[in-house]
Image 1 (cartoon, rainbow over the protein chains, first blue to last red):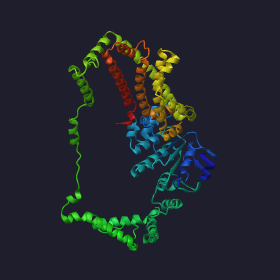
Image 2 (image 1 turned 90 degrees about the vertical axis):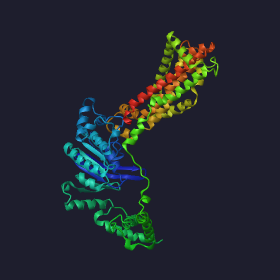
Image 3 (image 1 turned 120 degrees about the vertical axis):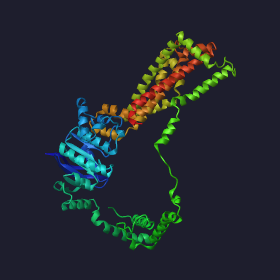
Image 4 (image 1 turned 30 degrees about the vertical axis):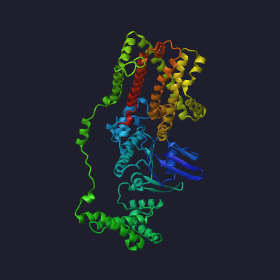
Length: 251
Length: 336
């Protein structure tokens, strides 16, 4: 059974093709990370799966129950935290389920708070609770940790892994952070020029960072994104640019 | 890593060297990826001037033995300072009341000293006395009630219509195309000038009075609601749709609360204008109401009826307070 099936999806804005005959399958409970350069169509793909962007060519099949965590928390500032979480739930279950979901992200005692009093990380955790409270079969994460500081991001990674293990939705995480993708996903897909370029299975190297295959996977992904692996290639890159800089300085 | 900007590297090494030269960093520091051996003379010269400048800034004071030269002015923040200020504070209400009280005192003094004839401007004391008299003989309460009811029924309808139009035009393109130009045009007409026409059309009874209040209040309400609806964050609307809110619930949970600050501004304008419209409307053939009191006093040259002006002022102040109170409740989420 697969949660998501995309066939021949094509999307163009004017003459600019963002997605070019794209095929993608995501299995039930699978955690897939989608990496690519900005403007590469990642978000367009996610929005199409969310139903926020129309399918103009090709076809997609997604579960009816799906929810999104956006890059910004997008909480309604005039509703208390628990009311934000329970948005759109049937009236009878609202309070209990919101409380439970907030406890899962460690914010049970913020249920009555106004969103504007939360920190960036807290607000994003509320957004995560709001997405999970309706037990989606597909969870779409659109660079949800991009605006957070490094420490908060690490916390969020742990939290997301935990929640994924507990609820087992299929997940599509859009990110431009290769390390984040490797940390969280079972499979990392590179989107380049509107096509799925290559994918790296990461499930088996999930837990051990010292596994040489982890470094290999990282280097390969960075290479696919057009970035030389940093730690190894640093000095040579600097040398190259130094050599290039000579004529500029000589003017 | 992206392509390395050679200028940035130069600066980093330059700064590191400078700090080291100034004794702020122990020993020689190598910025990774630096290429100091390959530098061309121009960059080398730039670094030299950098070093000279920084070395001067950091090293000179120690040489001169005067740390104050680097120290600059110091500012201290402590809890005690703020406290001391607060103790000197006069309550806000008192500070607000000072000017009105002074003006009334001046008015009373002027009347007592006969700076002007009390036929022209009665003393505040006499105005207050007139107020008590008319209140006790029942003239003021009954007429006041009629006026308040007129203003409020007119405003309630006007505000509702303005609100509905503002939401419709703000959200729905066909409504905007159909209505906005007309309503904007009507807004530029001083609506009070249409009163004689209304009297011609609807007679001299309640109808034209209420109608002028409705129109007067609907327009500012419309303008403010529409602009408030337009400024609601589209990302929140998208979120709401994604989480399964239908159109009506989207309006109730996202659009209206988001537009509330503007809507309340509209309510404030509208209520203010409703009193204005009331005064004008009641000048014409009022059988009852504050306008009638003024009309009667005018024909008898009773300037003491100035107290009706005070009543109008009090009504305006009261409505403003009610809106402020509503603001504090409805906008509690903004914090502070």
